[in-house]
Length: 144
Image 1 (cartoon, rainbow, N blue to C red):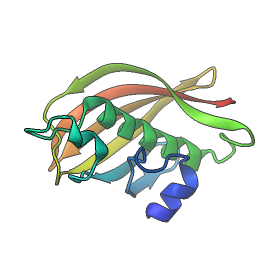
Image 2: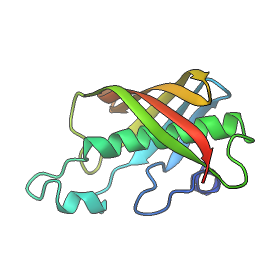
Image 3: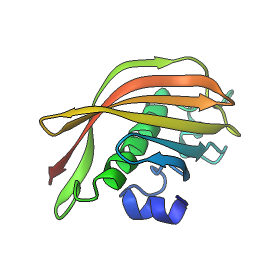
């Protein structure tokens, strides 16, 4: 899935779009996406000027956007009309290594289940095959 397809699925736009490409997609199961981390990211101006590091919350947001693509591509009827797909919870977030400009962040998310309209996912962000972050993420679609 190239950037044009990503833009047709996610409502996010610069500077908050965190998915550049989808590399693998298994309907109703898992998704592997890519975020090219560049020095031009707006958050690097202040985090940190002496040694740029991608904020952990932005890594988690990247994983959450990957869950959105997985859910919406698996169930296109999920978000329709006046509805949005919202990030509603996070558990067990862990950060193992810094993500820096020039890294390619691989975002792997897997559906763990749904309960009363809340989707549960496990997520893993890696750089060069090494874990940068993991988390359990919850999302839902709601009318606004």
